[in-house]
Image (cartoon, one colour):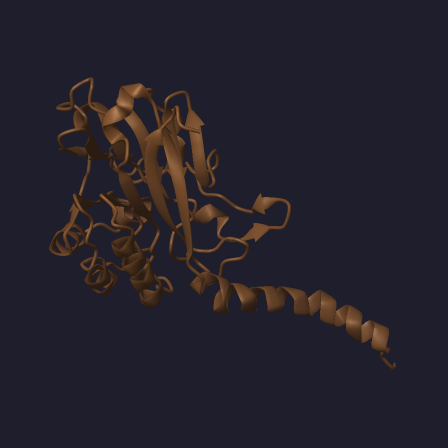
Length: 274
């Protein structure tokens, strides 16, 4: 049976569109770094954070189609921004800790004013060994597992993965006074609903990849457990803020669609300034 030109075009549209979309997502979009600069409002109770600039990265999954050139561009951008704090919100690997060495080689180039800090993601927790904290420490990144680092005007805290670990906020923030504001790293963003500690002005998270594959007019097609309420971006609840990054890497398939890798630069501003 002879196939008409119209039939060929219909077949091309039916079969070719997914192929073209995957090619775009794997060859172009997953390598395109978006830098999102966002002002985070802070109230008078959290005035010690005003003017602080935070760089946020997460979800490298460096053993799962990791992109060293992309991460290096992000690190160079962070250093040019002159940030005060770098927060790494977990999932450095998917399951192979051997990838930590090359990842940490790039992360060692970070030069924030006050320090680089990291928390564990669920994949890090499921496949944890001593090389993760050791290599992060050698790269100048302090891993916070239910722990806090205190500065003059504020503190930086980090919780263990909710899915893979044993988070304990009371233990982690036990030494922080009631008047000192906290920037809290916690891999899974839905934990934002699980506490009401007034000291936490900003929680930063990853985990969702922003969906990684998104549909036009619909958004994320599939989101992980503990990442379904807050897919990506800035959320606010009373005097607390949450920022969820889309992350740097990919998981399961080497593609992103309508969901580019993200470096977030967050500047904390007086909430009275509009």
